[in-house]
Length: 294
Ligand code: NDP
Image (tube, rainbow, N blue to C red; front, side):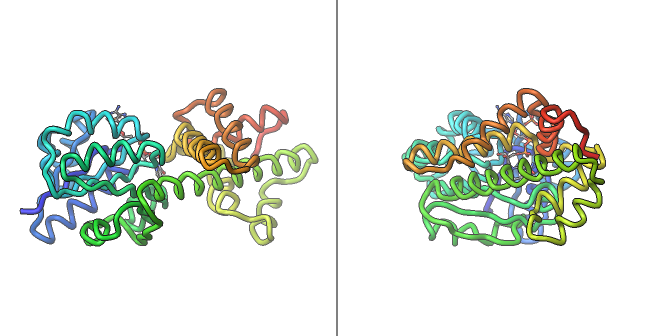
């Protein structure tokens, strides 16, 4: 029987693995889950009919999915699983990982007959719950075609190039999220100091050329309400913008706006807190301007 294993039941992984378990049950496949904190894997098994397993057992799967914070944690679990991997398997890494980590991981897996696809996702926790995530895949096209039917959490799957290209596209996408989030926060802070009503200002921006995903779907709902629901950690966004900055250096590119945004998000992570929602980065702008965005 074909076995699918999902490693990392965090804010994204838990609902993604739930879709995988439903798909597996409907198609006569087996769905294994593993999480560092085992109680979450046990709860997943109870709720979604998956099977909580050890890393060594998960290593025997035909398709292995990972959704961990960074490429460093993926390398850690890979070290434990390496001797137990099944030749012919495909490892689909949904982590927003680092393109520079891909070659070494790819070679370690290839030595065991396992193909690595970098397959980070976008769409947030809402997209993970709805099963409508966009998946950007780097690596061999034939390996993607082999696993495509198993991407039960996806609404859109795009092959973006060679190994590492998926990580690169994800990092740049999230750097752009950082740019628009930060810039809109700055603009609203200026307007707040000018005594303008921010709800009205956002209403205008969202019907005008300054709008973005940050203005339309994040700032009104999370910042102006002062709710800052923690669905995507500020530390993870800062990590992604940092990857985009690293990539700029690696290709000897020139992207000062991305580099500056990465530095600002690092500062916000330090001042506001890595575990806060990414929109709480705007609390640093509030401090810089002595205003509250509400
Ligand atoms: P969470 O912090 O919610 O979950 C992290 C997961 O990784 C948990 O299962 C955690 O286990 C596990 N983990 C942490 N450290 C280790 C370790 N050293 N060894 C093994 N497992 C570990 O993160 P998210 O689900 O939000 O993010 C996961 C990935 O998806 C990140 O790369 C992120 O950038 C990306 N992403 C996140 C989005 C979002 O909206 N949240 C959107 C798109 C991509 P434990 O339960 O034991 O802590």
